[in-house]
Length: 371
Image (tube, rainbow, N blue to C red):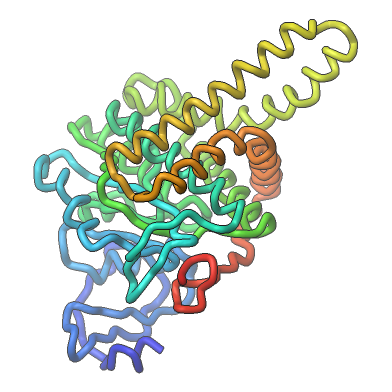
């Protein structure tokens, strides 16, 4: 399909095997778009394909994306800014990832932003806003950001080659690469920066069924656990500074222990209340504080998005998303924890399966992703 669409022709292109990957069968270029290079290689998984792209590329900075994602026209220009402003220290930059479901998409561009019609996609829209515009922005400020989304990230090619590229045998290759870059620069005792920039936006298609979303979240959690296991010796070591103390401490509390502790809370708190150990007043106060905190964080992320990026032009869309910011705390968060527990179980079983990730696509009949 690529050959027919872009009139690709076989080409000779020298490249170094700086990073190991499955054999390349051929390299193609387009007659009318000479900067387009397509690699045909033996299947070795996502990390292996990314490593082949790193080897064949020649620019000092490369961008990695997922196949179900679209960049805004100025996203690369905005994302490369930290490399231009601080070329000596910047090794990686991530941008904002937004949900494309429901948006009007034409010729590979989002021409009108609309909230998804699917309830699960709506809940994920609020979830993504909170994760990127609150959490990752804060982690970036203290230079302890341990993940740049595989959907959209820029990296300094020389540093990625120095750490051996993307790691095989993990489903969290994006997080694994960022942690390896932190480790490299800390071991070399060189000043560096792993940054998050909110202005560049990448639009991605979110799962619209519980089955597919559950597979995705279990895989994400399994990837975080695999990275923590590989680099657990970084935890609270002075050499690794904030990454070791704060970044890995957060992974330990939230990803390693969090799902189990949360499950115990769901089981023990009602049991203690039923047994009379926990007073009704304390139970209600605890639930009120817990749910209010979650709602405030989600609504705050939505307000920040509107003040900074202004991607939702209609007031009724903001009202709908505000309602979702409240609703996600009552059921969706708890289901997410069950999916994370599934990821723990898969990690303990050493599973490397990705599972089927059904997508509707960005074409004219893409349904939830395009109109």
